[in-house]
Image (cartoon, rainbow, N blue to C red):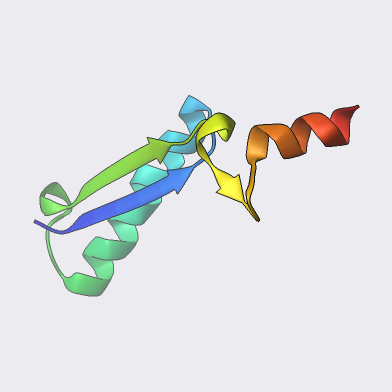
Amino acid sequence: MPVITFEAARLRIEQKQQLVAEFTETAARITGLPKETIFVFLKENNADNVGVGGVLLSEKHSKIEV
């Protein structure tokens, strides 16, 4: 049971569908395993839950917009 995990900010449903389809297709082609055995987990991270350089992303974005 291969597992692919992808973490990102919020994604549109179309983006999620494309990521799952393309990750699965690529992993199946490279490994030779059936697509049905490949699991893809998409994890969306809120900007309040991610820090870069000691600052929350939500704070960085609010400073840029001001």
